[in-house]
Amino acid sequence: MSTAIVLAAGRGSRLGPAGDDRAKCMMSLAGRRLLEWQRRAMAQAGLEHRIVVTGHAAETIVLAPGEGRIHCDDWAANGPIGSLLCVAPAVLEAGFVLAYGDCVWRADWLSRLLAAPGDLVLPADIRWQALWRARFDDPLADAETFRSRAGRLVEIGARAASMAEIEAQFMGLAHVRPRGWRSMQRTIARLGIARARRCDVTGLLSEMLSDGADIRVLPLAGGWVEVDSGFDLACYQACTAAGADWDHDWREGQP
Image 1 (tube, rainbow, N blue to C red):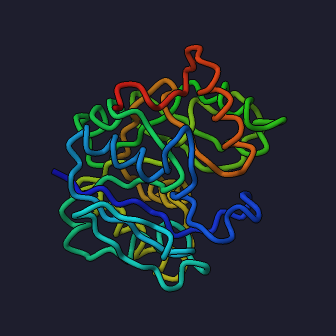
Image 2: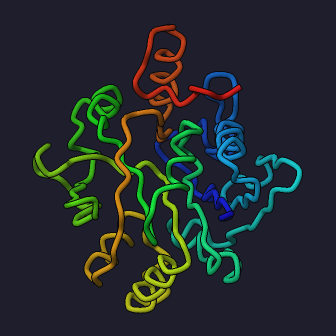
């Protein structure tokens, strides 16, 4: 079974003062820390081996028994790929599930990700517009391009000029099997380690597409959220407290 690697090093500037003294994954949402929601979903999906990559406010991150911690000393100068590269090569070479520390997902979405074929599999939210319209006055100000063909990714991570360029949105999650990691390594080597470390995941995936990488897309409908700002937290709190069905409720099936 793959290791889950939670990338939780970033500061999260959009959170403002609320993020000064705590890691983003330790923000509370619907009664639990984000990391606790992640932990429960991962355990239900069978991802018992988990590593958290820390950076900003690392001392505030409380791990469960058996979870590993790796600290990214230069987190402020690097992006998510820089955090990923702090993990031991043997762990990466064996295959892993990459998870952004500021996102939460339905447990069955993780199970479907693990079961999906492909060397590198990317879940994608096809109901993204509802979530982005709730979060932003102009969804195009934040959403990135995402296009696929016959189940394979063909474009990701650029600024979109229209909704037509966006089929779905990245969900802060990917399953990278050993051959997928070797493909990532080839692109990292081409970019050079200093440039690659500053990349976010969609940026690296875009570069991989330029190198001919085969990236499979797993379409999913809602069932997740990302927390970038205090407004996001308030929005999700209101949606979960309303008691009505909500497409992006990640708690389905979780105890």
